[in-house]
Amino acid sequence: MYDVWLIGNIQKIDDPNFPHKYKVDKKNNRVRLCLYHPSRNEWERDQEVYNTLIPWTCEWLYYYELWLDDGKWRGGGEHPNLDDRKIFKNEKIDK
Image (cartoon, rainbow, N blue to C red):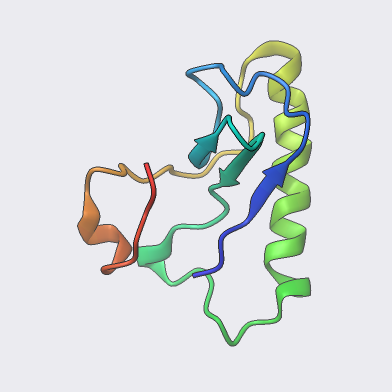
């Protein structure tokens, strides 16, 4: 599983409702994005990044900008419960 991080001057990084993320690293001004559901095999290492992770990241950023405006996440999706380790198939998830 590749980690996709948003890095830089991230608006509302302290908001407890920051949407679709796996981890917030305030010290380094970065957020690990939730772009796909690992247990559903929506992404595999043999898939082309330019056809998957890059467009998914662009879409995430689009919905993030809307969320900044009014606090509503319109990107859909299902964010997995990080306490349910079974869904990650033994992959390390940082809290």
